[in-house]
Structures are given as structure tokens and as C-alpha cells.
Image 1 (spheres, rainbow over the protein chains, first blue to last red):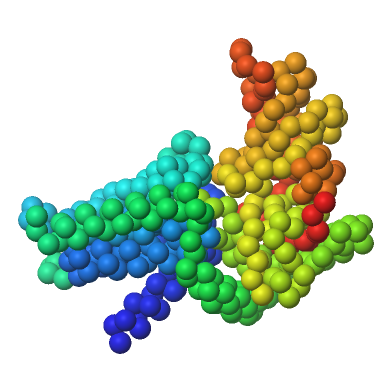
Image 2: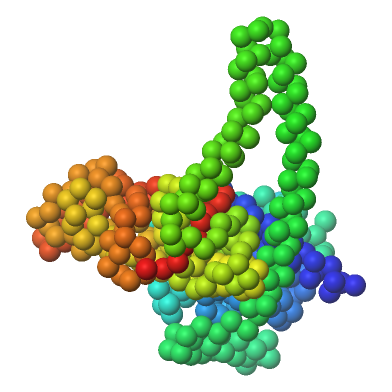
Length: 150
Length: 260
């Protein structure tokens, strides 16, 4: 049942992502799923889940496989560390961490595409796009919390 | 090394190897079949959205009508607004029809179903495919001018690479001075006109059309106008920025024509 729910959520995420844009920028909602998998399922499952979303996104984008696969996998892995050890979940920390991880994810994709294919947009436009995507994802940090959060 | 870190290391190496392989041999797209499923859902979503929007739109129009009935003059204005959408649609379709009649290379007209799944590709999905006669590299235009070209086709859907996409380029010329160059996308809102000699006089607002010299895009399709000219102190060519006539955020229908 859990897998069916996740598959439906992923599918809906892709549909929403392909349907809206703000200031000509498509939101990066799939990173939210990778982030959520990381904070709920710990690093290995988070990485696996993130890379699964990434490979589907790479395939759907029609470009080459890899940038989303690697970046989402890394987000899934490293997001699990955010609330272990030093940090305790608060809404503000949720906002900061999801914005920062969105920024990291979009930057990794931009760099990998630039290295292995072609620079997809100018640096200035990329900074604008990454900033907008981070801002758009920020409010979701309030809703997504680890299992043990109060 | 702990097992988790080893796994992470293997994952990174495998991903980088995969990308290196593809940068040499071309992209692998093993889950391409998912595109059709997703596009099918986009089509359902659009029809659901239309059926939900329609009653609300009508309600809104009626409310406006009631308020504006107070004055006869304003009633006329309200009626205009009520039919404005239909008039615009009618106008758009008439323009498409005139394109069809005018354009001997006409293949089919198509609606935009969705944007590509990621920001970087500048791709739109249209509701026509192989069954409607579309093949790869066909040209997409609107009544305003060049929209892009077809990069991928399945039975019922196609992917349209917009002219603002970084992978887009076409032979172009300035309509007035006839200077030839190459127009290519920048990945965002504007395009760049390359290889226009330094001594050529280019003015802001000059129109750019396709030159037909690339054996792909037919000659004379309007592309955009010059929005910025940057003459560097050194170098052979000018740096010219073009604003396309076709605004990607506003495209709803396109016409597909055969390549040159």
C-alpha cells in the first residue's frame, strides 16, 4: 500500500511540476520527495528513493541520464543527517534546510549538465532559477518533519 | 569504511560513469515509455481543469453582468468582456486557419499539453504525434512567428524544443540589412544572434527572420526583434540580443510545418 501511495505522489508531483511555472521558472518539487524520504527513511533508503525519482525525472526530461539521479540520491542521503545529532526540528529549521537542499540539488544538476552536456542557461539566469526554486520550496519545510519531531 | 559510506561512494562513481559514458556515446533514455503515460495524464488533467473552470468562469461573467446592468453604457462594456475570451479564441483560430491556407508546408495544428518536466530543457509537449504526420525536426510556428522545432515524436505526442532553448539554433538574417547570422537560444527568455560582422549597422527594434540557409527552417519566418546590441571594442562580431515574437508563456496552439 505504501508503495502505491508513493507512486501516486511521485506521479502527481511530475504532473504538477509540468503544469506550473512562476516567473518562467518550473518549481523543483521532486527534490522535496527525496528530502522527505531522507528524513523519514534514513540515509540508504533515502538515497535509493531519491535516485529512483531522479532517474525517472532524467528520463522524462529527454536529456541524458544522471544529473537528477545523482543529485536526488545525494539529497536523499544527506537530508537524513539534518535532524540527527546537533539539530532538532523546528519550522524555521525545516524552511532553511529544504531551501538549502533545493539550492544544492539545482546547483548540482546545473553543474553536471554543464560538465557532461552543455551549459543549459547563462550563470545569471541559473542563479535566478535556483533562487526562485529554493524560495518556492521553502514553505514546505514547515509541513515535512522527521518521525520523532514534536 | 562503514557500509553506508561505501554504498554512497559506489553510487557517486556509478552515476559519474553513466554520465561520462553518455557524453561520449549519446543519451540513454530507458524509461521513455513513461512519457506517454505522463502526457496522457496531462491530457486528462487539462480536460478536468477545463470542465471545472468553465462553470466558475460563467458564474464570474454573470456576476459581472448583474453589477454592470445598472447603467446601459456599462452593459455594453460587460458584454464585450463576456465575449472577449471567445473573440480572442476565434481570432487565434482564424489566424491558425490563415496560416494553414498560407503555408504550403502545413502538416497539422496542435495544442500545448504541458511544459517539459524540468526547467533546463525548454521543451513543450504537444498533443499530436506520428499519427498526425509529425516527424522529428519539423518546424513549429504560430501566427506571430517561429516557435521552435520538434525534437521527439511518439504516436500521439511530440516534444517541441523552443527557440529559447540552449540546444536550438537556426540560420537567420536581419530583415532590413539582410545581414546573415545564426540565432540560438540562451536557455531563458531571450535569444542571441551570432556572427553579425562588427561593421554591420544593427538598430534596436530591427526584425530578425529565418534565412533558410540551414536547410531546416523555411526562409522568411519572423523570429523576433533586436532588443540589445553590444558592440565590443575588440572582436569580429557583434553581441546581439533578440526578443522572440513568440512568448513561450503564452503559446496555446501551434502549427507544424515541414522542414525546408
